[in-house]
Length: 106
Image (tube, rainbow, N blue to C red; front, side):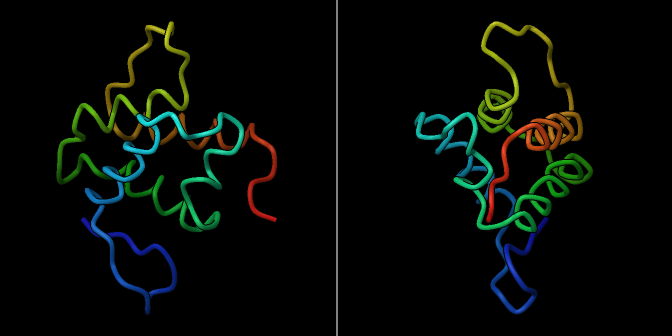
């Protein structure tokens, strides 16, 4: 599964590469709780494409545990036991969290 990170004339990036990069930044602890969308994505369009890709990822592939764990950490406190069984559920929670944050791209 491929996604575009900008206009269609820009290079295609494989979803796996994007998940690895985003997860690595989250696991490294360099992501701010209030600014993570703008730290991880160039603009809202890139964020929305990521959410769409994540929501549909399990149609073709399995979301790997390290990616799932890192993305879950953005939307759930460590003490929360609720699981997010699918990538689609996780994408929905990320989008909801995004809507509750201050403006990211000005």
